[in-house]
Length: 69
Image 1 (cartoon, rainbow, N blue to C red):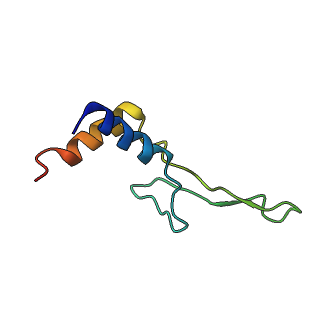
Image 2 (image 1 turned 90 degrees about the horizontal axis):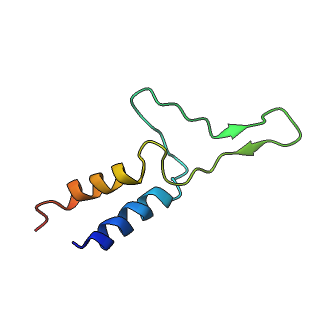
């Protein structure tokens, strides 16, 4: 894979809208609903992740594609 392809994949991963049933592990909490009980209840709809930065996401992609058949 080229450097541009790896960076593209990492950026797409970081921008991906997380699924409705997103459920992080390892003690990380996420509460989608907020402003409950007010006239303006809302729901967080996160994109990507703040668990990794761009450099870390690129490292993850490199790990994923290493030794790819």
